[in-house]
Length: 289
Image (cartoon, rainbow, N blue to C red; front, side, top):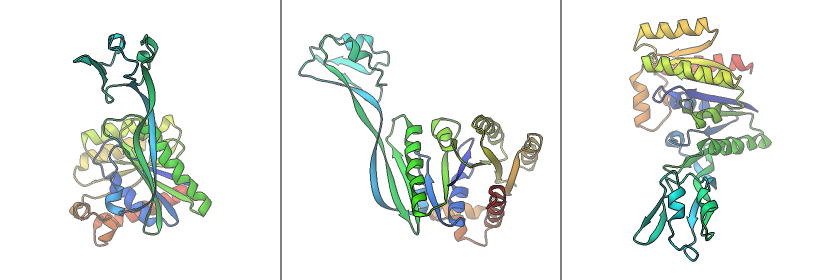
């Protein structure tokens, strides 16, 4: 099953705009929103949820008050300041607790336990005639990479029903959800923009993708806003033997589509659409499909 991961070194480059369009241009594909910290593909596709699954990340400490004597030992050894002793009662802040378990080991009365913590949910839905797998990480929770892995695992199951492509909207940056989106991908599409931060973060994500030994190509979005910076990115790609899949000019209609909650493909007169279709063709050539 072909897995295409659309990622970016920073937020705001137009990654989701491109991934949404690619999902509509491909046929017989599965949509996977792996930006679990801030998912937004559902705003465009309006999926109908078929199944919902709970995701349990790490563990959190909880107090058994039938055994607790409020001795304060657990508070003394907690290095994350998650345990407080107030008004004669010990409490644990679940957002500060890292689940290290030192409180469990040190409590002389076995009054502290580690329990599985619900960190989010993921959903298997239908977006029109396409399956869609998406998720939501609870605010302040960690283990986002694990939730991305669950989303991808659920998406790959559709191979059994004849689907042959997964288009992944990955997380921006180079953190856990981004690397989890890249791992095992057939091809990675990196979306950048001609700005100082865009170029800097492009180099970081290129280095990251190369560490995972994935095939990849670059798309320069909003390419007309800074011709000099665009040429700098193009020169960098040439020197690094990086394929440029295409350029998308700055187009105000993209903002209109976003505000209306639809794909840019709904505006065929948009200059951006022509460029995206060309990128789609170039991507298919890279994949030899």
